[in-house]
Length: 298
Image 1 (cartoon, rainbow, N blue to C red):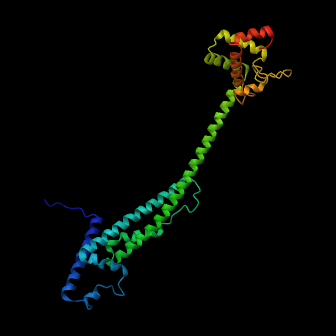
Image 2 (image 1 turned 135 degrees about the vertical axis):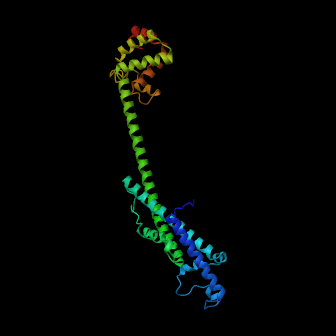
Image 3 (image 1 turned 120 degrees about the horizontal axis):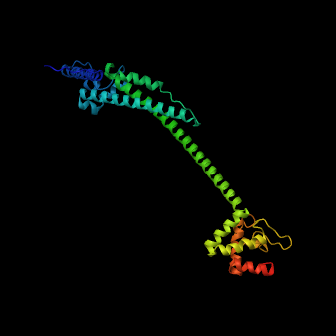
């Protein structure tokens, strides 16, 4: 049984091109053998004033040496390559225009790319199988030039879009960082406010006394009694008669700056200074409490 082959439009086009190439080769051969040309051999190699400039493409030395059929194959291959590049250029232009529109960003220039001329060239070169052979190089060149113009515009728009996107990302990152800094500041302020209450100050003092001095609940009980008497655990306490300041009633209050510059507003700073003073002067809170009971000061 004889098999039947499906002839696709693309295959038909290639057959038409091949037929044209063979016919042209045969014609050139006849002319060469019979001397039918009315000009000299050297003159025949130069295009006439009525021959399109693009036909020179088919008579360059390298191509002429390879023979007419090979020249036609080369011309056809160039046309197909130009057509493929043109389609890519149109697709990429459409893509960047769509991306720019979707971003909603100001990209600092035109946001559209006119591909009308390139599409017209695509239509022309798509019909290369029915074009006279000597016209095909010129159509190919025109398509390549239109492709280049669209590619330049596409690259420019893509660059401007990427710059705008990077700027937006940087602004969003800066805003997020500022928001995080604000959140942390608010948390720190809330924590400070809680630590500055009498109960918060006591909790802080108990933790520091145990972790840094090894004082247990008995010593902490003496400390609570001592500072209840001195300031009521009020970090804003101030004795107008003596100038004693803060929870430990430091005299003068500026002594507490040795622990932290925020000694006027931070109960924890005052507590650290007070525990250092008690440890250095009396050795323990209970010893300081005993001295206070005996002298009414410590």
